[in-house]
Image (cartoon, rainbow, N blue to C red; front, side, top):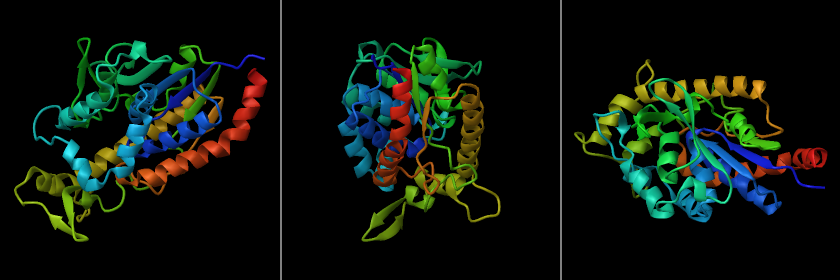
Length: 302
């Protein structure tokens, strides 16, 4: 019996996307390498790095990442199309995958983005891999839009948070979807001690940055929750979570995957990038829970 063509749809979820690493590790261990990979936002990052042969480097970087070290890669600015230009992160991507082209990857890959001018869902299936990934995670207000082929592109989570439909369109017979937001609606979207994002650790104590620095300005304008009204950043993250949750439910109901892997991530916020170890472990656990269903689906479709 021939094995069905497997499509892997890696969903959006900001820092929760580290769980994708654990999912892919389990699938590889079981000999279930995907024939098609589609990713939205952080899903595009993990999927693209995986196909480019840089999964080990990504996992090592994620596990070593702390809240304070994260800011070394964020070029903060107070003008332009986003709070963060994204140039440092793009350079980091280029250092690892160079000028890799999507069409040179071992299997078909698509990064899901949204066209800013029209709201159209855009699938990037050729061209520079690093640019496609950067466009897919360009969260409005936070990261600057990316211009590709005369179109300004932003985060694909605004149109297709879990790209099952793209896997189907590219010819997948069996689609495995990884939904990072299955159990998080209504939970905290920022994560623990968001003030740590704009502080430095010194002997176990938090040391505030200079009062006039851009990061301290961000702290008061974007992260401070001391008042009754939510912070700007809190509103942005909560709004993203609502969009992802509602769109995911609608899209998955209309075009359900054959297998859904749903890591239990309610305790993790969208900005908990320093929790990679826990989220990778939960990604592995969630994939292992799905293995009996996956085996049955493979049997039926073979």
